[in-house]
Image (cartoon, rainbow, N blue to C red; front, side):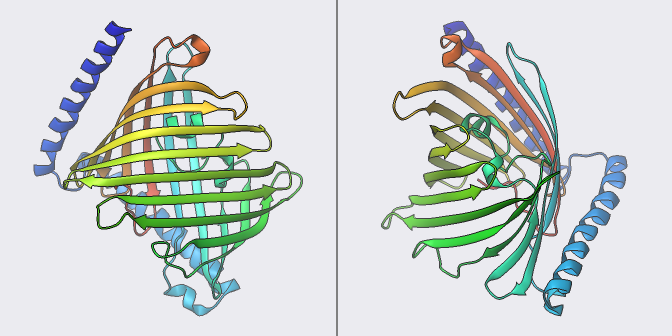
Length: 334
């Protein structure tokens, strides 16, 4: 184990050095790492599809709502992604993902009509969520969600912010009604730089039953380039009928406006009656905006100590590339 740990540290150090060397390209290219010929193909494609996403959502919104749909802020987007996951001793996994949301903000005051792909409740277990490079919901298209969200005008920095939604999930045969409540709160801990965030979700789907999740995130900046976080997650799903929990320590290092390193130590467990630590792992993640703020690449090597294999160390590697189609994007933040 000591040898593997040393090799892991050496690989991470090499990876960190290569990432820092890549930052020297900032002086040569401020917005893209792609060659000119590749940009010539990517940018027209991105512009056309982004325009189509926005026009489609605004046209649908004006049909259900009002002519204000042509000018009001719209939260619609489309994301295409491709992810490769490799875990030592297991089969390599490839995932081609599509995630979208059509936001219709003018349907009625304080309400929004939303059409989107798989919801948060279908992200799977906490182990899959934590090891995925992207914290967004499942990128498959197993169903389409159509619902109405009741928005809250409360500032979560001053009081609890509660939003409610209901609708149906379209399946191949039968629609699946659902009800959901999301409650959030954010505190500044006195005059210190520490911030505490709470995100809580309770939902019911006719087919899968009830689920509940709570997430507590405390963190603070460490200078201009670093941000420290301690994250705690607890989740219960009626389909699995077991309590899952995770705790993560993260240190985010902003190398430049286009690149971030994230150093993580994560503990994953389950069961309330007979609690057990299922996995402990260390991960180094590098995320870079490789073109114009809408194309990103993630590379994340990690070292796992799973309980099912008597804590023997296993290597893992996740690589992901994503392209976002949305007018305003900020995806390289802490």
